[in-house]
Structures are given as C-alpha cells and as structure tokens.
Image (cartoon, rainbow, N blue to C red; front, side, top):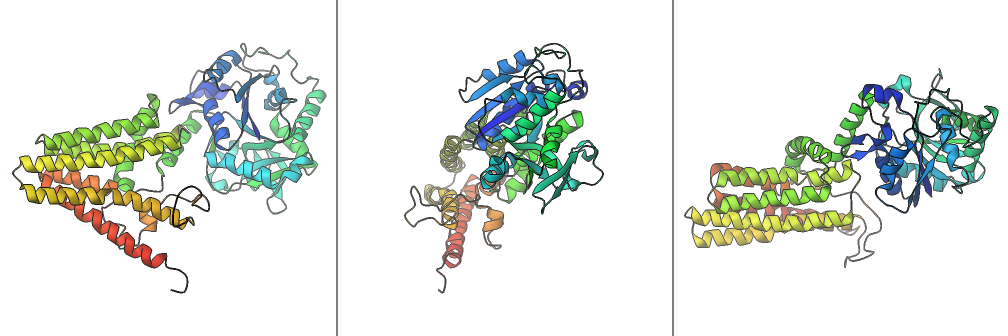
Length: 493
C-alpha cells in the first residue's frame, strides 16, 4: 500500500502561537513533523510515501529530499490554499487503489497507522466499491481539545460514518485525521473542486507557487467535505481505534501535549524491573529529551551508556568506589535512553537492539572486573574475591538469556530455537508481570543489579557488591527455572 502525507497547509495558528517556521518543518525531539509522518507510514508497512507540499513548498521539499530515499516522492499542490482536499487532489493519477492518508501535523502512536492498514486489508471490498475508511476515536474523554475536533456520528455498530463535521451536536466519536483513501474519495474531492470552479491542480490561488501568502482564500475543497459526501452515500467506513493516542498539533498547547505523550510513550518499554520503572525512568526521560533535541540517536545513547559504565568500572578498580557506584548507576539510567530515543524518533532497528544487548554483556563483565580489582586493592583475599567474581560472572548473563528464552517459549517456540521457532510476534517479557509475585521484587534484573553496585560503591564495599551480584543473579535464575518448570508443564501433568 502507498501512503500520502499532506504537508501543504499554512499552519497560521501554529506559527502565531508556537513557532515561526513552516509547521511541517518544526522539529519535535530532533525530527520534523513531516519526517515523523513519513516514518509512521513506513513502520505501518507502506512501500511508497508521497508527500504533498504547498505553503513554503521549496523549503519543505528540500527537507524531505535531503535523505535521498527513492521510496519517498514529493508532489506540489498548486491549489493548496483552497483546502486540504484540494491538496490531496495533487496525487490523483499517481496512486492506484487504496492508500494510507496521514496529515503531517498529526502526531500519533505509530500503532494507529498499523490499525488503519490492517483495516484496509480486512475491508478491501468496501474500498474496491469506491469507499474510504476513517479511523475514529470514540474515547471522547481522552481527546485533546474536543471542541476543536471534527466530530463523527457512526452507525452499524460503529463501523460506518453517517455524519461528520466540527459543528455536529450529536456525535459518538471524533476524526483522528487518519484515512484509508481511495479513488472514490478523490472523485468526490474532484467533484467539489469542479463545483467551486477550481480545476484539480490549477494555479491561481494566493500563494499558488507555495512561497507567498498564507492561503487567505476560503477553503472550499476540504477532506471533511469530501468525507461527508461519501458518508451521505453510505461509503465512508469507520474504524474505531483500539488503543494508542494522537493529537492535532494546531497550536502551542497541542504541541506541549504532544511532547508529554511522546515522552510517556517512549518510556513505556514493558520490560522494566522495579528500579527502572520507578527510579531510572524518571531520570532518563528528561535526559532522552535533551539528547533527542541535540540530534543524538539511539545508537549514540547505547555507546554513551556503555562508556559511562566502563568509566564506573575503572573508578572501582582505581580505588574510587563512590565515584564508581555513581557512574554505574548513571550508566544504568542512560541504558534506558537508547530505547526511549528509538521510540521518540521512530528509529528502532534490530541491529541497534542487538548492539545494545552485546555491549550490555561486556559492560557487566567490566563491572565485575572493576569490583574485583577494587576489592583486592582494599585488602580482600584472592580466594574470596575470585570465587565471588566467578559466581557473579556466571550469573549475570542468565537474566537476559532467560527472559529471551521465556518470551520465545510463551510465543510457541520450538525446543531447538532458531529461525522460525516462534509462532508469531509477542510482547516483551515484563518482570513485574511475568515473573511470579515472590520473584518480582528481587533486584536480579540489570536495573536492580546496578542499583546494588551503586549502594556497594557508596558503602565503599566492592567485595560485598560482588557477593550481592552473585547471590541475586543465581536466586533469580533458580526462581525462574522453578516457575517455568511448573508453568510450562504439558497439560495433564
């Protein structure tokens, strides 16, 4: 499926209250709004993305083309000032069949776009018959600035739109701005343009070249008007959202809301232990926001966390346990930033996650070595230090290994693992949800272990830190083996 991103509007209210730049180019956590929409479409599985420009077209087009992606195309809408529907008409003849339609100034959970694509596949007959689909949000209490939202009234169990408009008195959902468009929707918009005396793509509006003016001409060809025509013919399907969030970034207040929601969404990894969930995330969120604004990506954060832990290990080895503990805890906080940045900037990649996993194991080994060297320098015996270090080194990798294996088994993995071992994708292993209650609060996951290292550093007791690492790592491993043995037993045993 193709995607169309509308980035043609003047955004007058936004420029008056939030920033002077063209709204599609406003950078939110280091990436522009139009780039965010492109990445959302790509993550939803769209093979080609068409970006429609209008106001300040040359600046927007220059930014979009800078990445040099062959699957992103730019289409200039000469009649953009007549409304977003007139802008969409610029792609008529360039898209064949249904397409995902996003608006650059709508910031959202990427899962909403995936919901729209899934609905397009499930309801392809409606689209083939000239209809379109609109993702609607029935959770009215959660809608930001409800009075300004475009209201929707649905029927047929919430699967069909019968009325749409900002001034609806009776409504049960709102328009999220996410469509699955079709040639039928484009035909309705073309009919509106003809009725308004505006030929599709014709110049002649204020700012037609996309450089001058703010689009002061009345908007006569809008998406809402085209959607209303489809609804009146019974051809506009409704797709109620099943989770996620979105916001139309029209002004400074909406922009602030988008920032907050993005940060909360970014820190909801689902795999945190208690220390990470209630301490580290409170610290990592503002750090991630600063790093994102500075253009640091997730891989950069991974390397920063790794370097910080190495510095902590070196401090322990050099007889500076307090500094070592502080640096290791800081490294633990920074260890959450790479995932947060990947979600904030929509840059999650398997190779980045793989790099993070490998460097985490090296960092763990460095901490054990640093604690051992520090313990020996403080006068601890070779035998006690060696046994504690070996036990810790053997136990530390087990937490991550067992979480991955349990996730695989929960997904229906084959005993031998390997390619094709899982029956499908599953959520990440969550210690506070998937471990038994008697095991959840043991600080044996990485966040808890580094907090113990931090406490050992403050106490100036590196040998005690080694012993604690070994004990909690193996207690967690034994506990998970026992729990898995009984919870994964064959039915009837």
